[in-house]
Amino acid sequence: MYADQFEIYHGNSNPDLARKISRYLGTETGRLEVFQFANENIFVKILDNVREKDVFIIQPTSRPVNQSIMELLIMIDAFKRASAGRITAVVPYYAYGRSDKKDQPRVPITARLVADMITVAGADRMLTMDLHQGQIQGFFNIPVDELTAVHILSNYFKHKHLEDLVVVTDLGFAKRARTFAELLDAPLAIIEKRRVGNLDRAELMNVIGDVRGRRAVIVDDEIDTGGTLTETVRALEREGVTEIYACATHGILSDPAVERITESSLREVVLTDTVPLPPSKRIAKITTLSIAPLIGEAIKRIHRGESVGALFSSEVEFTQEMLLWEDGVARKLDTRHEPDHEPGEDDTLDAAMLAASQAGDR
Image 1 (cartoon, rainbow, N blue to C red):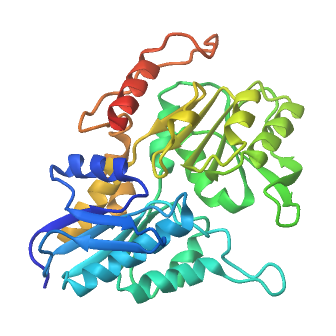
Image 2 (cartoon, rainbow, N blue to C red; image 1 turned 90 degrees about the vertical axis):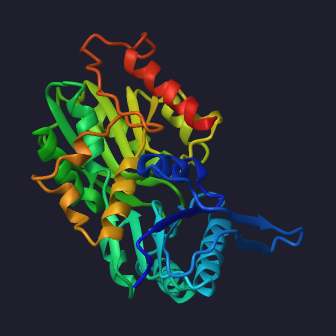
């Protein structure tokens, strides 16, 4: 049995998110040194006594991906050798998730390899968010709790009171998008696409569903280079959609994603902070919602041995209550974006979210 106390630690991947989670839980992040020597070898030293404690290591495997993965593995090993009672790897963004099957001859299944490494390093369980495919959970031989941002994102659009909505997604995200559409009481349209070789672009084939004359919300698990997103926007424009929004859990935004979003007709792109968004990529069209309370509540429930799935049940509406939670302050969402609203207008919500974002940076 581990001690009746949990500790939160983090690497260099997303320290701001770790601090927000700690603030939500009313605690401080543990003391830990994680750095590289001149020869690029990573060194980890735990500065607290963690014997028999319940340890949560927050480390999304985002850019630089391979360094983030190695930091996570070495941190897990350090805590294992320091006799931590239980080690939970909190990986809000799971890299290599697209490499989850052999879709070509002589290629690896890297998502399985990363799962094996996390397990062998000594993690006792895994907490993650919106995996690229749900079956990646089966690559682990340890318990996996997968959270979703669908409720937070859908509630954001629900509070905008947009009419004639249609939810648009591709086949890979259709199951979660169906939940998103049900929460908004909107129909679902599917984009049939085909990826061209191993390049970061897709050739869109068809829009399945009635979208003409409607406002579209494109939903996906991540936005990387923005190529698929902008192709989807063009396809919807051809089909007669009047207004287009987009949302995703993970805002990877590799170049030239921000430029593509800026030049597109998208009204707004809503992301969560599973992956840190550098100041150079914070543009007026991009809104970021914090998932710190959701992960914090999951950590609390895992530690107490309570249900994590209950967070998303009809009985517990916790995910509907924390849209604008930031730095320990809960705020209600303001109504915005009437039909004649134009990007760039003065908006109370934009100002509040910008101030919260800047406070997080500090």
